Image 1 (cartoon, rainbow, N blue to C red):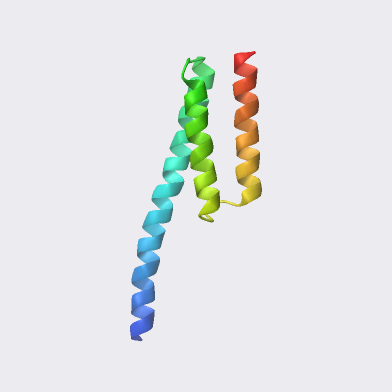
Image 2: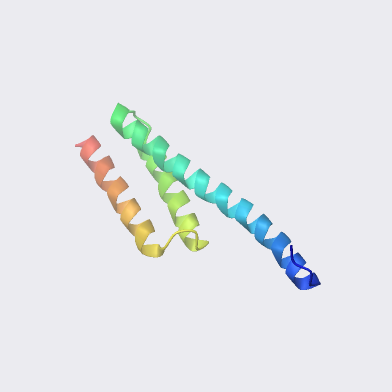
Length: 87
């Protein structure tokens, strides 16, 4: 455990940030998985789930949880799957 006051405060901040970041990443992954399941099951709401998943990926990228290239790659793959399912 840190002894210096600023280090103690920073440790508390890191714990809060870690919880927040973990929750954000988890919700992004959940949105992507829901979209993938909908595409496999050929559900009608796949387009809506794509929109939600794409938004979640963008949000995670803007907060620095994932890199911009990964966000772009993930969105591109989801769009391709959606187009293939609709074709």
